[in-house]
Length: 322
Image (cartoon, rainbow, N blue to C red; front, side, top):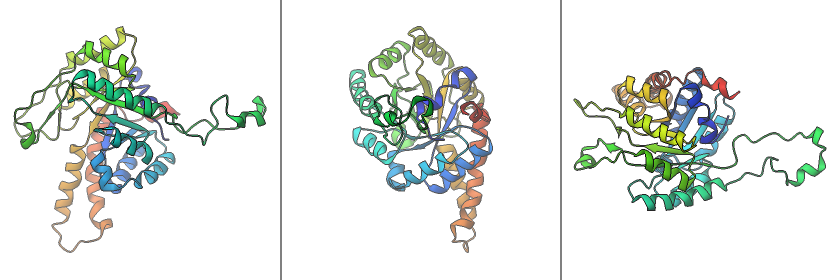
């Protein structure tokens, strides 16, 4: 069941859950994530960064789409941290159903200007393999009471995510001297109103990557509540996204999912599980076949993914879309 992000995140607030966005960098990882989400009847976001897409190749998106369309759970194919219009257009042409434009390092007005352009292009993207518009000539040939065309497999516009504020990084070569800019409620409202985005990634205390030993991150849950309240007061239902969801305290992440974060990005946690297990497996120097090497790695990754799905209160929620 292939969807765009706006459709997928629609029931999250009412039912108090968040949907994991798992970054995949191989087809084996993708299949493993789809398998565990189907077992747990959980909606899922397949997230692929531009660097990951370059590694996989754009042609793989057609296979990912086909696998999702045949799945029992709803899913989105999402571009993670698209840096510019070129990356966004590559994703749209490749077959993504949702894109992120990340201009958060730029001044507010420049971020708005670039994001507006992406929204205009993405929301204008259409498929003509279904009959959905009243002016479609195929309507004329069939009486209204006999109309047989099916509805689209996903919304015809590509959903757009943007980021306001910036979260930290844990890499030693990048973290030195960094300044974290937390998302302010009034700016969040203004940004959404001026850009028309579908989802907003906010900065409330997470970092990309795995935290070093001894570092204890702390989410600003009160700031999340303030942002949600400001959006509600402005009549906005734009869903909020949390980047850097790996390696954070379970209780804080679960609380964030309960009170208003609709999408949580998980990359480092599942990749660490996958490749740490691979290092163990490859201690056996006689192994060389992927079908012998990768299954234990997939299982290790799935254990982490299953924990996140439960933590986000996402298990069983695929039933909401049927």
